[in-house]
Image (tube, rainbow, N blue to C red):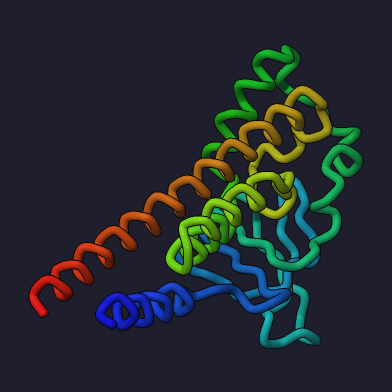
Length: 202
């Protein structure tokens, strides 16, 4: 019974973590603001958006240099086609090795692996086997590398950069899944210890 009560208390905490509403984008600025928006366009110098609460309102612009991060939940053209959108932009890095090294740094800094940690942890709290299965399934899906802010996104048009970014982004997904399983397993371990202690004391 004690184990059941603890799990019932933990699961709502997991389920209660804030998540974005479908279609809702978050723009974080250097001034510390978080703008809830619908991103319409992401260019090399500017982000075009409307306030999420005013879908028919004025179209606003924000300089890329003033944007520190973006969480794009909606489809923001042309985010899914950097290799096409930036095809005429010159690439400052010519060496494939340097492109791969830059991709590794950028994936570590900007790829977020949204939801992987919490999804795996939540499944693990229900059952370690479910946690393993969820983590494996989540990690097996190729990461969407077009939904996070990346100031070097124009380099995606270079195959060496794009492939390396994809590789390191997937490693981050695997790492997040492993961390979620580890935390979930640790919480269950505490649950089992408390349950055993209560049982022994009864």
